[in-house]
Amino acid sequence: EAGVVQSPRYKIIEKKQPVAFWCNPISGHNTLYWYRQNLGQGPELLIRYENEEAVDDSQLPKDRFSAERLKGVDSTLKIQPAELGDSAVYLCASSLARTYEQYFGPGTRLTVT
Amino acid sequence: QKEVEQNSGPLSVPEGAIASLNCTYSDRVSQSFFWYRQYSGKSPELIMSIYSNGDKEDGRFTAQLNKASQYVSLLIRDSQPSDSATYLCAVNGEYGNKLVFGAGTILRVKS
Image (cartoon, rainbow over all chains, first blue to last red; front, side, top):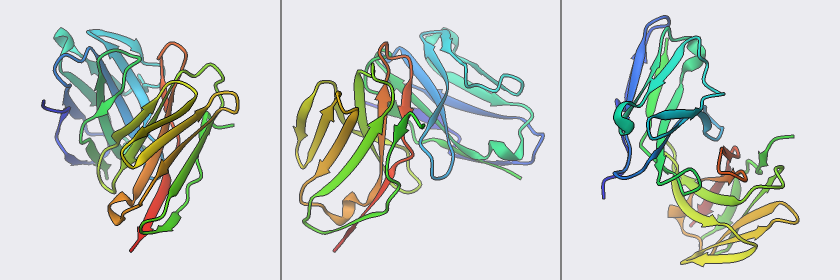
């Protein structure tokens, strides 16, 4: 069974530029999560989807971050414009349902210069 | 008070010893508890989940949960150098609404 797929794996951009990350969850997993992980910290939830619906986006900086999960499968997370403080690893995870184990993709390491 | 607390370490143990990793959490109604292993430059990998008080064993790993003390631990028996990684404790709330991670404990197994 294929795991969670993310792309790109690495991205370097200048501040104020836009950037987008893509995630394809494990087949059959209805719940999809986007996390951000800073160095030396655990992942922090940005947004959670139940199928197509964003049910928890309280930690998403909505002035510059947006996300979508069309058709309830793959998802895109966008930052526009990026700031220096956005440099981090962006992780996508999926689970069968919100109470089940979450499995992470390889992540996207974003560097904003 | 942080929601999930772990000693950052590093915890150093000799090869073949038992490594004991600890985690405390603040939300008394938490229902699900997970341990993830994260190698440097890699993403977290789920290694154990535990939902009820007591011990759960899987190979060399044993997870222990004490809800009354709001404490969960991970024991690694016969530690190997390949176990050297950061171990993240994660706790899910009553309705599974949010998985909260600790900052992780760095484990170093010396041969």
